[in-house]
Length: 259
Ligand SMILES: Nc1ncnc2c1ncn2[C@@H]1O[C@H](COP(=O)(O)OP(=O)(O)OP(=O)(O)O)[C@@H](O)[C@H]1O
Ligand SMILES: [Mg+2]
Image (cartoon, rainbow, N blue to C red):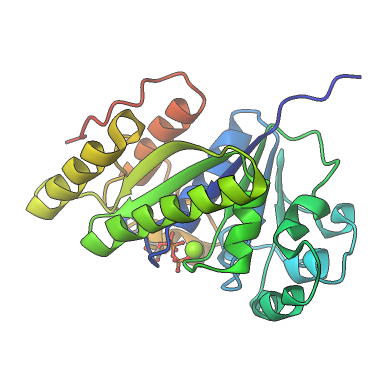
């Protein structure tokens, strides 16, 4: 029996509110709609993943990482082809509990060891330099950095890259930065142009086409939906569909700016 290659992708930016969760949940939804098997992991105690799909489950990431409940018992089906490992505020306690354990940065990798049957594992991360983020990078092979159109988000992206280099060195692994994703893009503003240019200067071809500001995006979670199922014709859906093509390698990752 052959195991299929599983792409393990973390979404990080140490700045808060840059579109990490929105990007992870929307891409998870779009990829599963295209027939891929997806696992979406919520590594943030804010627990926003479950709100986008209107799901609950007795076992959360705390049970998986701290209580060592087997992963199969923690999986919750959100859609056809989309499973989630959800979080809630209990995950906040994880950090201090794991601290006293050996190989604490490898708790997520250990918990998901032997997992197969998925084409993608997407890991939504918190906006902090934390043990949970270290665990996500130790697990992942690829990284996507959503960057909102402000200077601090740009700094947050650079901080992720410094952290990534440390993890690569100490854990003797390579994590590929596949995409820097401009979010909250507004072509009418000078700051959007400046931030995208600064990103291109540092990250070159890895800067992806931007996700435009879309007022429908923050409305979607209150309907327990992701933007693509909330409003199919929205800008947000169009832009994330384009990113899905780039991720799958069916479109060039040139940072063209949509009108
Ligand atoms: N392109 C967009 N246009 C308008 N609003 C957006 C866009 N992307 C995300 N949002 C909204 O901005 C807020 C922050 O987005 P999101 O939760 O995805 O960021 P985050 O990086 O995960 O935040 P945190 O660091 O707190 O985890 C949410 O209310 C979301 O609905
Ligand atoms: Mg988030």
